[in-house]
Length: 461
Image (cartoon, rainbow, N blue to C red):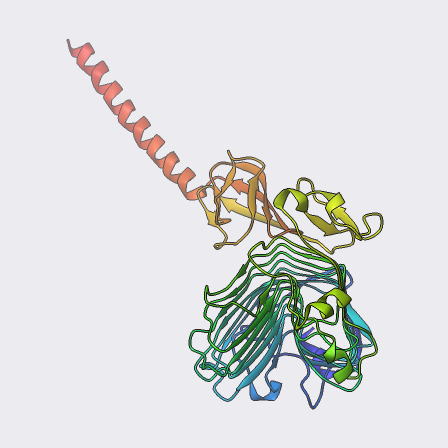
């Protein structure tokens, strides 16, 4: 996988799971001068443990498995336990970064990024301009995402020099062209988007949304949902946040947001449960041919307006069936008028709607432990289950303790659809067995000596 950089126009397909933990600092494949233009098919396998800790000048600030992709084909990529943790301190010559678990910049792909999963942590600090998406930091030209799910949590720490922050669950910022379209179809975000902008100046701009930002012209968001937290710590500068689509929205249909939106109490405008500006002017201004239209979108954030508009007439013209639901209504299929539950959507058991073809992944691992061993780091997940607590237990942090001898299966259920099964086989500690043996032998010897002594005493008497 690393050697793809030696032939950036090649065609590749994964034939095994790939473990990138051997790379302490992965160098992204492709840059602005020499982007990846080939094909990569994940083929149902997993790219595990991508780690990026510093940004080199050769990347131009585009960071991910790929730095820059141009007219490339990316499909069926499952990236698990990724960790991109970069800062201005460790990368002092970089001022602007665009970060995605898959690609920093995606330019006019031949095949849309589809049937893909991003899971891990993206932690970015103190750059002047920051663009982060679960899959792509920036897009350019005709781009699209179909059947993609982001589980990656995104954290941003701004500095005094940070002027722009764009963060979204799927794809954050896009560079405009006369004709430019980004379509996001049947995608979901579960990742939390946490922005600390307390150090920013008053001129800074912060845009954060569950799915995408600055969505204009012919852009479309259809059959998508957000369950991740959207959080901004301070009211400094201009702030635009939304559950689904951020600063500008051209088209959003058959979507919902159930993720919490956490904002400073003094932010009266700029935070919306569904979408940002829907007034239609962006479509004309940027050469679009469609009209602004929001239809069949639902939300649970009772303290927020669903969208923004400059006049009620525009809202009446462009909006249809955008509705606040209660918790019970969110669990009722009949509440979601316009959703296709025959082909696209289904209901979770005692839960909310999910996409029928939503990609999921189960990682299986076999390990052997010695009785008394502790396995695993602290893991953020929803549920931990052990099939045999007499053999192995698992605590609320996902740490496994071998308490007995035998076999057990530990199931770690991460956020909706990401499951890890660890088959445990434990054995006795050989050293303990030797120690036990030694103690037994000493006790037998002592008892034998005492027994002989008592016999001799009786014989003497």
